[in-house]
Image 1 (spheres, helix red, strand yellow):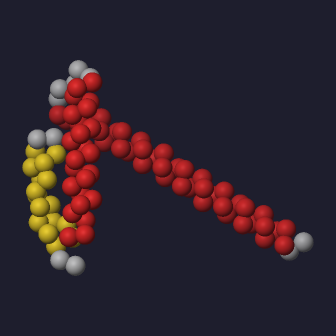
Image 2 (cartoon, one colour):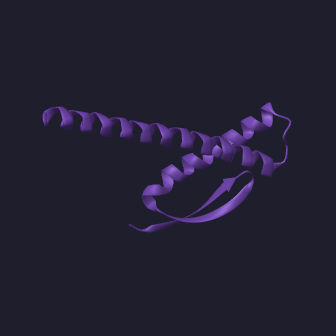
Image 3 (cartoon, rainbow, N blue to C red):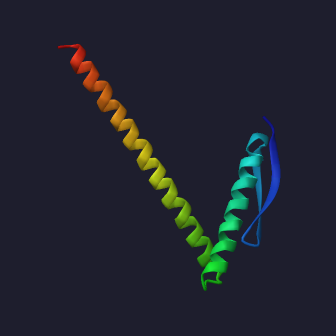
Amino acid sequence: MSDLSINVNIGGRSYPLTISRNEEEQIRKAVSEINNNIKELKENYAVKDMQDLLAMTVLQYASQTVKTNNSVEFEKLQNAIVALNEELKSSE
């Protein structure tokens, strides 16, 4: 895989990145989502400071990630309990 140098614009600032070619679409979609979220926050709240908008965006995404990870961990635990229960039943 070859590396690709791109520039992305987040919140009005340009950031150079070196990524693998297969990551480009994912990175560009993420940048688009971040910028859309910043725009939405700016329109719906009286917040104008870019650092505050970025912090609020990061908080939203981090909260979603924690929620998703907790759901995944709960499901793994639940599956492990079911498997253990089945194993105990079969050994009786």
